[in-house]
Length: 174
Image (cartoon, rainbow, N blue to C red; front, side, top):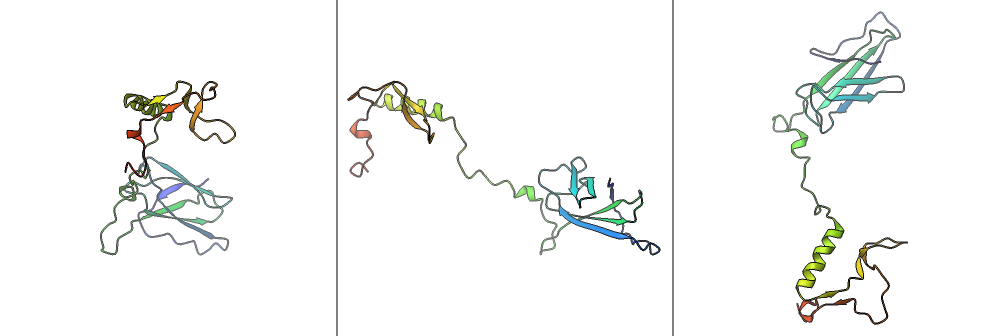
């Protein structure tokens, strides 16, 4: 099991007297929506090793974390982690990515289709339209595309809709 240790100094050098020493190093970005000092990260290094650590205080989404482990085969092998704060080309510390990662929705919010249909029918009736009680918003197999469907059987020649000419959308009315 890997242990997370925050590094305060330069990277440690491998012991010179061990011929079987390996160094594992990984770089990864602090993900969005983390709480520094609270959120726990789990990073799979390889099939034998996983790094588990708490996001360091002061880290912001988009910062780079560099983790290094000197593998001697001992149970005391530990991960050393460094937080790398990125600078802009103007020399200023960059803003957290969360500040720019919340674009407004690209679409209108999803509404309740049945409620919207009832509002439309009520508005049309108030404007002098006729809409039969035998039709409603719905969908039928096999395509199940929302539209207007018959709730009960319709007779041949039965009036289903009547829209006054003043409400028609046509080239002559535009």
